Length: 353
Image (cartoon, rainbow, N blue to C red; front, side, top):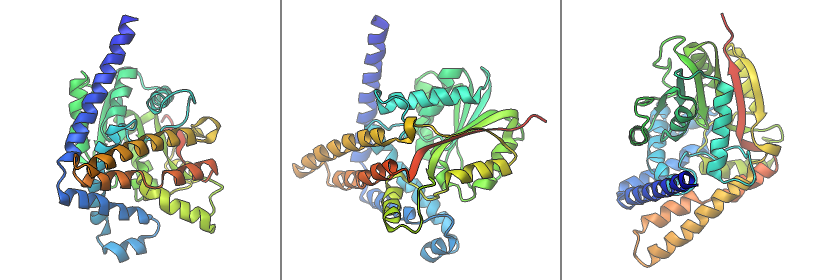
């Protein structure tokens, strides 16, 4: 009982500290930083498959502009998310309806660690590691060594600091890296497992990336992928579906919008054997968790706007939280209609030689 109470107190103090640090970072944002964050959202009007539109809007060297805007986006978003229940920066599959977002994240990560089946002391690669919280949990769960890579240097710094302060500095290492800068900066057959959580919407070429992951995995090792996908019911010619998609993509930060079937076919083309191919949410729906997050941030937004009006908080807080909370209901509706999901889950194995 005493141990459980101590653990709850530790979690509570950690949350207070995280919220304070995030509010402090947001409070001190320059007007230029706020403007760059808000303007970064226009990249989510695009899709990698429509390269002509990307060139028309940003020029032949469009990827450098996209890359800059992704950095602008996450350098602020990671602080906004840390204020709420999504410090890990993803809405998890719904594994237990009675549990919170964080508890469902932990439940999914436990399942993923079991599916990867990496032996204690093994080496795992986390592609698109964000603030490193998932990497830390995986190391804690399984005793593995995790290498995390991410495009945003502010998140990498946060991930490394968290690993050190939580006692996992030797088992979690992080580096700045771009998943579109191929080949990946790792040797052949160097990892006992690879995973990614809702990061591959930023891959310009999933097929090439899967082949790289295949290369760096040891024979017999597995790759686990939880990500955003269009589902069979989504109709590209349906105006209602198109309107929902246009609203959802900026909300969740999505550029690429592959079908769930594309993940399977591209993994197989890369040489993998498919072990798991499913929607990891019970019943196939995430709506209760999405609504949970939306309600929380909407309440925070009301409080923030009140304090902005009272001139306790700077005016840019209102702009940030208004943008963050825009169109949550569209995501809920599309999930309930079975059009899209961020809980598509695949596990693929590299065959033994």
